[in-house]
Image 1 (cartoon, one colour):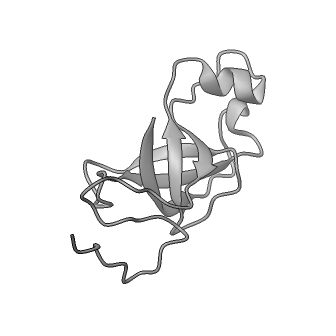
Image 2 (cartoon, rainbow, N blue to C red):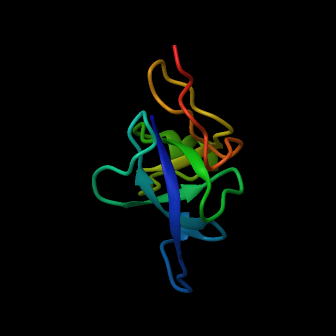
Length: 107
């Protein structure tokens, strides 16, 4: 699992049956201090996420097949939650409920 930000969507009228009626979103993996890292990837939305949301993405083998009850679904990444807040010791909090100008607390 990892935390990511939804940075776009994919619109496709003709797609593999396992993707029928599913929202495909482009996600960018985030570091524990909320910075983008690596290359963007495509994930199937299970929770109603939208562009700009910070989300929890899972990539366990067979997870999407179980969740969507579709045998042999070629789904690798699944958005499983919308993140309200990520707090890591020594880092600035980030997430959907954190004000944009959150400041690190002084010790």
